[in-house]
Image (cartoon, rainbow, N blue to C red):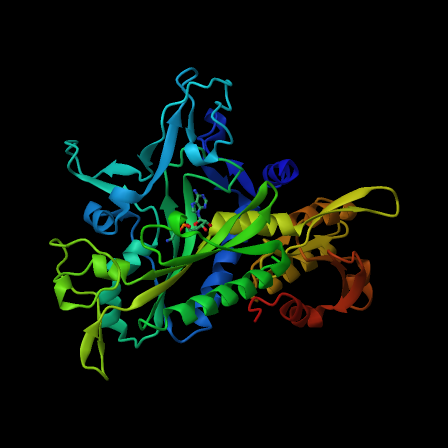
Length: 452
Ligand code: GAP
């Protein structure tokens, strides 16, 4: 982990937020390479969830959430962790993270009994600070999918089964944020709520577990580095009938990368008015605040029915950490030196190619390199950079660490002889000459932004 954190800072993937003021615990910023990597991961998820399917629509809902939403979702009552205080040094811990009844900070045995600590952040809305006008920062993106259920039904008329996908920020006031970007207070989720007919839910749950394992494999996370955990009954979230966690071998241990939950009809049922009109399977509390029913009309039975929902919910930041961890390779070279290379899948690589002029003081070479950079940028594959640091060998090493799949060098042969350029492969370090006319095809064939 230490090597990853240091590379992440040195090369501009991830920084501690508010670093110059000593940081803010559990909050990180993504730098020039990090933002590209993160965007590419989110784009790959969106492609596979929305564009590659005909039964999923997208949503981008607000972060500020009406407290009634999170009251009826059960989060006000139950979204808490058990908190323990050390009476001696005043440090706070999650009770379920303590390995013994001894304070990890000072060794004292004077610990309080565990008590629930609600993880939701509140913020004042409007100018009057009377404690009444507040909103929550959403603790999961899912709730806005449920509260928009009718809007999306009315505007797109989908038929069961269908899903609503969303990527966005979520906030949790974690008691002990830790392990770099693994457990943080501000993070992003990629969530799909997939609505199905009651009775087909278990089959769909299994299908989504298999589907998500395949997807992570396409992002460079092999199946054998993920273990499936069936969450025990007494650890299930309040809305879940069954949850399968994808547990990945992070540098600090085996931990949850994504959870796939069978949320039954709990959420739509909880947010529905006149609940007595429906056969709701989950235990829901009465709702006198909602002004709508969140149900679908079954054309065969001619009845209104509240669907069940299967929810694959992945953390973007945990995904980035897993992708960084798998990509990180340290190799000993024949000349005795060592190189660090980030072997990202090309569609995730922050920079797709670097164009380097062999001589930065040769006008013709520089102009040609600039032209090629612009030509390749227009392919829309992602970021192509022009780099004239003057030392080609150092440029290759820098781009190995950035995970750039190809370095394209423009030299005298390009200008004076045959119009070919050198393409140096990040993984094999082999070089080949390709003619300028074939460059676009080369890039399109090698940087597949739409892997199956
Ligand atoms: N809507 C369901 C839900 O929010 P969750 O298991 O609490 O379920 C889903 O969160 C995913 O969000 C997790 O698998 C994890 O990847 C990510 N996540 C949750 N809390 C996080 C945190 N404090 N920091 C980073 N990622 C987090």
